[in-house]
Length: 82
Image 1 (cartoon, rainbow, N blue to C red):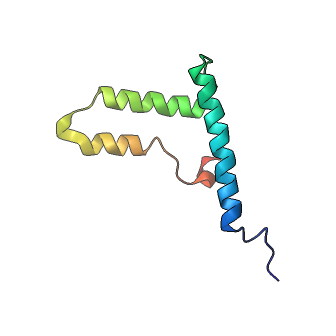
Image 2: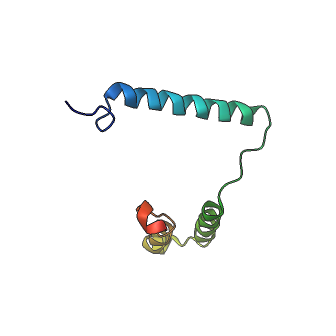
Image 3: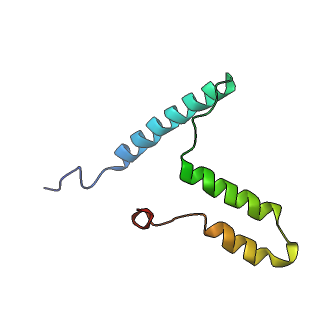
């Protein structure tokens, strides 16, 4: 028999999505009430600053360079981050 923990069902996936949605809804409600959002991690603040600098220097004649610079702000492989 297959181990259900290794092969989660669609229902498990849906339940995880529901839990995440509840968490996001609660975060949004706190934001609407005037609470400050939680501080971003330093690596995300640095990436945001890099992207802002690229956007501020935007040259319509060189969009490929800007997009290449923005793409370098994202790490797609979590193993490479360490």
